[in-house]
Length: 225
Image (cartoon, rainbow, N blue to C red; front, side, top):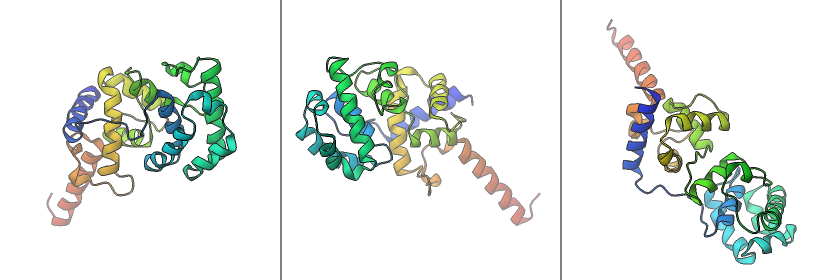
């Protein structure tokens, strides 16, 4: 099975498991997704979704966020961790969105990554979910699981992104990454993977190696040649 064939099979199986490929961050406006994703760094999406309603109610527009008191934003987002850095990034990125982009979130990765606190993961998510462009969101779930599957061979997000773009159909890439997050939370859990229940086990290189090892151990224990 080639990497492209493996990727297509994984896409097919994940679609069966998770028909609705949705972002787990709650938002209504493009800049809200941008900010929510920034807040999600080293924080759970569930926690972010608890924090953003107050943030976006208090500061409902890019202009309001650009003029906001950084300390007040830090107070609201405190439970997300790294609140001083994140609050500074939020204010600064909104100033740039207001002054340079006339209140419109850019639709290219190249422009988005120039904003404070915005990396390729965030940029890909915005480009894919807001603008419907091909995107590969390389978060921890994506990197870990695609390495196990044999679709990627690196821990570096940019390298994994490039490797996945080479094997995933462009129109499937964004939803594929969303489904990996769901799969990683439910089955391919980092510390205690439920390999026996995994829908991807038939095309998982790591799973196949584990199965082969178990067979060898079983044969050795039984004394069979």
